[in-house]
Length: 354
Image (tube, rainbow, N blue to C red; front, side):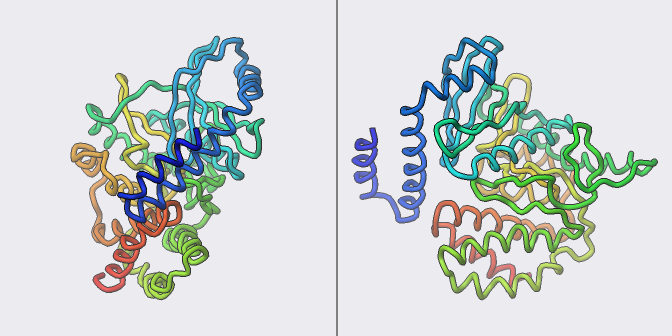
């Protein structure tokens, strides 16, 4: 019950740092709201899912979730399905972006993702849900190197389409079709969310300006809004002026990205690796490996296999830090100031050392 959670929380708070307190507080608040809605409106939820899945049988088979969403698997007349739920405003935008991301990745045929079905408004309130294929999977172990190869193929896919398109097809900048066409710009055809934060994926011809304005500046504006941090406010203009330097002599072409490939968003089953929870857009392929390297979950075999196909280009080290900065800022905005130090450290290093 909620009272038991509160008691446990008070005991835990005696030994946790302020950073962990902030993180867990947000998680428990979201989880508590979702649990409350779940127990109050089960009948309406069950009726909706039975209707949409055209089933008389709807047996919960277990689920899970993190700090953003809750999930539940169901056995139906037509097999197993997985339903992701979020009771917050903006959940439909988030799930529509995830559905579009899964469809885009699946259309390349390079790496396995759960097949999405549809996004529904949550009958219990202001949230939404995403229905998708249920995939049995466990931790990434045996297929780490195969996933590295597949991610490299995913990142090269648009370039391969471009080579074929050069024979006569016109350039396309909007994507989103069932049969992938060459995408000549950076962005995506719909909004996606990295965590719970909507990303500005409006199309751009220039990667450096796209990353500066629609990735870093978007996160820094949220930091300013919530924390009024003087150091980030002073460092950003200095870093922004230096951004073109990190890309001198480098041609960046658009690659379809997962967008949030940390270790918790990759797994495997007996058929091979599986990735999920994407926040896709077309961007520089190096961006993907930043989050993959930050929180563990991917061993050396993964990275070796990836870089064997897509070797590191000159200046990779500085850009790797630059791309990690986005994710530290994103975590700061989600989970609090425990990520401030890492964000500032990267900003200072990039301004001073490169």
